[in-house]
Image (tube, rainbow over all chains, first blue to last red; front, side):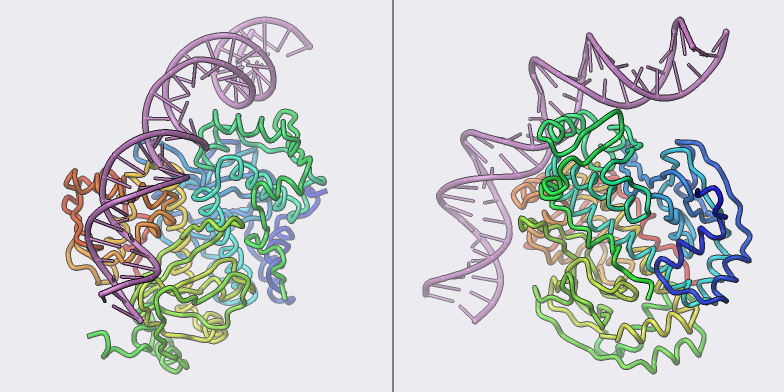
Length: 245
Length: 245
DNA sequence: CGAACTCTTGACTAGTGTCAAATTTTGTGG
DNA sequence: CCACAAAATTTGACACTAGTCAAGAGTTCG
């Protein structure tokens, strides 16, 4: 299905999620030089300290943002799914303050930063849509801060499982309440401020209590109501209601 | 000193930190209807779920963003100092996903959201500056996630003390390495994912080890080098180097 | 000057981390 | 497609950081 949709159309789709585009807006996007690129898992899209000149829109697969302490400890500070832009922060910031890596095999549409800048200056609707993409990610950072700062391990894990389900559904990618979670338990720990060992214990407990089921890395939310409650999950921060109009 | 600078000029100053403004840009800002407002500590500037129609630029004092769990636990997810905008997220998002409160007595310049929207559409330089304000805040969220997720209590407290010092200095407000930290230990705990009791123990330890000195809530960084090292602090994420040009 | 916050301190607890080893799964080259 | 190596998961025993509870001292402010 998706194979048949051109990257230009995917870009139009991603942008019109948050703003009403007119024919000129669409024509400007369709006229962009866009390159499709496949990236292997664990490869870097952006490195801290770099000055990126391209921005990627994820077409297939997942990526994540990470930051490292000097001691080598890692925090995964964001997950990105198809339809997300990996590099809006470099639209106007000179140097990247973190890394972006492919979590799975990734297919991205690559756009020159200066093309995006030009569109944000000349096309108000596109500027608005890009702003909203950035603002929704900011909102997600805030929720993650609440999650890591004030929920216990069980709540944190449950919250992330709920978020991923909600985001995949919003992107039209999740079949009901089952999805493939392409993260190791170590990565989950890095995203939640916990250790891999403890992630393992919590997942087991959630399964034992009937809130989720697991088959390899496939997650099924067996009791959405209870999981949502245990995780104190409310999707307001994802701004999925945010209409284009 | 500051009293004599008009809110319009302060707004021009805040925006030209990140973009080169021409005469038209400046004229557009000076033509805005801006209201100066004083707000008492603990008062709300924005409430979660609201649709704000104003955006505030902080002239004097400090504010913070908070999120609550259903159980009533609080996370302080951002601090704001003079020169920061409290509400850029509402430039294009309909509903607020968190609260903004006055930490101290606050003097703000209030601008209509729609005026800011109009400027971001018509004045590319202003759009760029506002983007950068938003992107720098995003960067700070990421660093806070690393801080809370992967540093121990001593590192977290030290990091926040370094950040506040760096931000005050960047705003021209800190006298050397001494500043008034207008937060209770409970608020510090909520900002760092710790309890007030533990904040107290860590502050005492930092003082005993000669990294800081305290007098009431006045903090003096007694050994910047060591504190910076203990906290793994690197100011890259603040993007203070980010030039207007 | 008194009430309500803060801060400080101690004793004890609990949640999460650490370490290590066994088991299972995944990936790769032949 | 098999065989093996590497990576990831699972589990248990134990350690330690940070939380909880409680009470006294200090501070702020009407």
